[in-house]
Length: 293
Image (cartoon, rainbow, N blue to C red; front, side, top):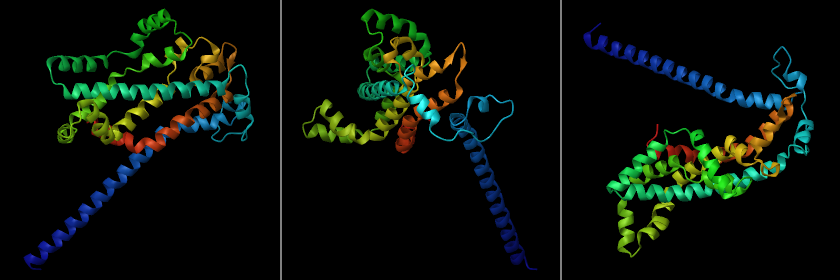
């Protein structure tokens, strides 16, 4: 065997070995992603399984993988229960989530644009304080916010449920991170055509930042829809309960009505799931644009 033939054989062996290594790495990657996907989807399986099961089936000593009460009986009991009022609570949650999402996006857009474009010392201090507030747990602010809302007479009102949540430092910082990288040449061209900062913002910047708008809107909507502690404090009137607070009524000192609670949870997650499915592409795009990993 000549040196040239030996070299060619070595190249073939190394090439096949590299392909096997890449194939093994790809297989391990898919296996890891499959295991993680199953782990993340397990809570949804438990909700669906318990939603179509009876109380004795759920609390049995041995685990049963499949439900035993397929049908609409649990759905009818949840929707027709006047003491819980799930349908009314769904309507309240929809109003609160939509209005708070729209208001948060508009306010955070303007705040983020101001922090990105005005580079004075005051703007830098404002940005720093905005980031600092992200390190403060939300529950710490509940007591002073509750005092203010109570003083204003907003207990058990849409104002009390919506307005305190309109000002999101996280959303403002996401918009600020996106607007920092926005090409200023487009705004300068608009200024040459006679557009002021306000008009350039709404006509140029916002239409070209819809990915971030959809991302922040999705995050805000899901967070507002799933909120529990703040609506529990504010919605003291049963008619103003959101769906998460209404579902907590299935847990009493006499026991927990598991089938109804899980069926209500299955109904409650449907709107948030639909929003996420339709906007997940923009959510990933927005998070990528913000520089978060």
